[in-house]
Length: 202
Image 1 (tube, rainbow, N blue to C red):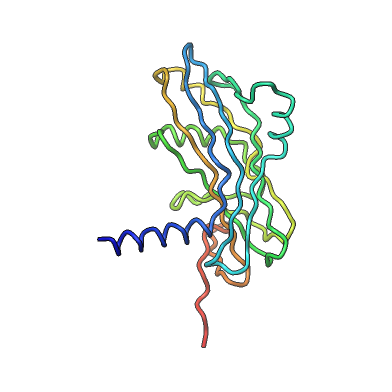
Image 2 (image 1 turned 30 degrees about the horizontal axis):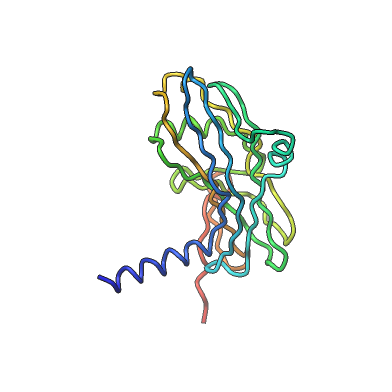
């Protein structure tokens, strides 16, 4: 049993090393249909399984706006929009890489997750694979280059009926893969919707 626990901890550490997290965005529904929006964290990580590639995640525009606010908590009603600009930068020293990102949720059922994602103002160049939940950026990045994932988030108008004092959260989970280390999978429109580690040839 103890051996299994140690193995599980090692696997979790390896997965954590491969990904970059932008912390968590908390939404807490208060009285009168008002949401309190809390923003937490930045992050960075490397992609051990996909070659020499490492990402840094930041929010330049959102951070600039928050500097001028005494209270960094943003209060929103259903239908209102908040500026969010999770930006992925390929760290210096990385090889030319492809990137993908997804949203991870806590406290939301499948329907609410879908409704929330419909409120994202995605930037051009991102294509979602509904099977694995990732948004794939269609162009490789060179070291030092950045790309924004989405520009803003609108709270669904239908959420006026959500019970009060319900808290939930979501976070950005991003991953980079060295271009020469992966085989790209494209759909019928020739859009990248997946990648796999290339098999080593002997």
